[in-house]
Structure formats: structure tokens, C-alpha cells
Length: 455
Image 1 (cartoon, rainbow, N blue to C red):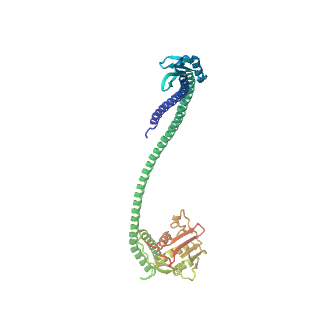
Image 2 (cartoon, rainbow, N blue to C red):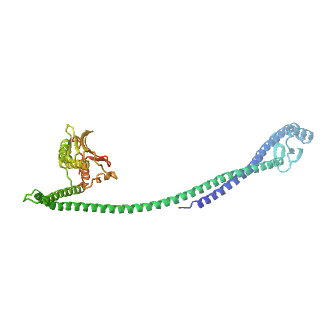
């Protein structure tokens, strides 16, 4: 950062010098101007008065000379009278009369000390000069007065010097002090800004490193997820073939198609068949999850009456509800509720939801299925009085189940149902708490509304 204070000090010093010179000039002008102006005015005023007096005396003498002829020079008494008639006693002046040859004939008044003011005027008679009148006055009294005015001017000049120099210099010093304080604050702010900039650079570098690490982790996760999906898909296909054989042969043995079996072997064959069917169901669910994550699920959309679809699903789980002593209540209404959907996938959704509700509802409990139409949408509510779910976060509500020991739940039914509902442009919301049952709400657009694009 450029250091501004030395430059400011240098310029302030030059400005102080100029102000001091200006103060000296102003003080000198005021000191000299007052007595000089006084002397100038007095000099010209007094000279004008003397000229008037000389003209007045020369005029009177011209008339006297014209009347008396050449003998006028000898009439001293008359000359005194003529001079006294125009003499101003308040003026310290003297008048002298000279003849045509320049000789002094008569005079009146005190002698004038140097310096003096002197004027002359000719005595003209019939166009010829008969003499001259000389009037002079001492200028010394005015010089003493000018000395007093000089002292007064000196006082005013000193006051002017102090005012002109002290006020601006004081303001300059205050301004310079404020400038220095502002400069120090600016330096501190600049240092803080530089520190903040360095910290921001470090944070930016850290963020870039974290972003790079996150991008790498995302790529690794995507690669791992893709590998996991491919692995599950391949393993599901590989497992289906031997499972189909196990289920088929165990079914033949349980039904004693090739001949009777001892009781315990027949029982074992039934267990093998049930386990194989359960394992095949898990494999199908894993395969569905893999297909959904890979975006390979295609829906065959067509207009469907959701009321009929729900009735079919309820019939499929009713036997299980009867065995578990669970009341299955349906409130579907009489009016058709048409939606665009894939019949197979919608049945899979509602069968999973109903099966879970029946499975986790204790004996003498109740499962209620309700279908409504609200604001152009179909709303399906499946509410049970079961054990509920324990969830730590909303996104865990589809994978964490409070299943009883020995339950054959895979935990994939709800995630699959949620994904399939989203593919239909709907929403699936779960409201559950341990010991308070579960309420699952499926919301889908009616067929009259524009169909949402699905992938």
C-alpha cells in the first residue's frame, strides 16, 4: 500500500510557507496602505486648496495692478490688506508676491519647513504678466499624523498576519491530523482485508479440495452403485434358475406326485417349498429395486378404475387377514375413480402395502382401506392399528420396520412401492409411530388431469 503521509506532510509544509508569505504580504499592505492613503489624500486636498488660494490672491492683485499701474509694488500696506483678505488662519501657510523680474516684493505668514507644498500663479494684466504669487505650506504636521496611522496600520497588519496565518494553518493541522487518523484506519482496514482475503483464499482452496474429494467420492459411489446394481441383477437372474428347480421338485415331493413319502420327509419337502418361494420373492424384489435404480422400469399406462384395482388386491390378502384375526375394512365408494396407471405395478404397490399392514397388525386389530377423490386427485389411505414403525428420519421410514421376531418381511416392499408410485406421478406418505399404528397415503392424479411424464 502506498504511503501517503510523507507526501501529505510535504504538501502541507509548502502550503504553510505559502500561507505565511500571504500573511506577511497582507500585513505589509495593510500597514503601509493606511498612512499612504492618508498622505495621498491630504497632499492632493491641500495642494488643491493652495492652488485655489493662489488664484484668489493673483486675481485680487491683478485688479489692483490694473487700477494703480506700475506703482503697485510700493503700496506695501495695501498689499498686506489684499493678502489678509484671502489668508486662511487655520492653514500654516505663507504667501509671497514677486514682480515681473522675479524679485520678492512682499510676503505674509510663517515660514514653511521642509517638506512643503508649494504652488504659484501669475498676475496677469492686459494679457501680460505683472508678477507672480507663490503660496506654500509645510507638510510636516501631516507626516506626524501619518506616523500615528502607521502605528495603527502596524497593529492591524499584525492582527491580519495572525488571522491569515493562524486560522488556515490551524485548520490545516486539524485536517492533517484527521487525515493521518483516517490513513491509519485505512491501513488497519487494508491489513484486515488482506488477512480476510488470505483466509478466503485458504477457504476457497479447502472448498475446492473438498469439492474434488466429493466429486471423486460421488464418482466412486456411482460406480459402486452401478456395480452393485449390475451384481444384484446378475445374481438375481442366476438365483432364479436353481430356485425354480428347488420349488418345482419340492412341490412334486410335497404333493407325492411320484409316490408316497414318509410323513417327516413330506413335511421337510413343504418347508423346502415354502423357503424356496420366500427366497424367490426376495430375489424378485431385489431385481425390482435394481431395475428401478437403473431406470429400466417401463410402465404400460392405461385408464384404470382404482376402485376395482383395490378390490382385487384386498381379495388377495383377505385370507391372510382372516388367518391373523385382523379385520379388513374397505371404504371404496360406488363412483368409479379412473387413473392412468400400469395394472401390474399398481397391484404390486397396494398388495405390498396391504400385506405389510396385515402382517404387523396384532390379532383383533383392524386395517381400513379408504378411497377418496379430492381436488382432481385420487387419495388412497391404508390405516392399521399395528405396532407402527420406529424411524430416525423421514427418509428412513421406508426401510426401517419394527418387525416382530420371525417375520419374513424383507424390508424392500415399501421402497419399491414408493418408487413405483413416483413413477406414476404420485406421492406416497407414511405417518407412523411405535405402538400407534401406521397410515400410508397414496396420492395420484385422476385421468382427467394432464398425465405427468415419467421415466
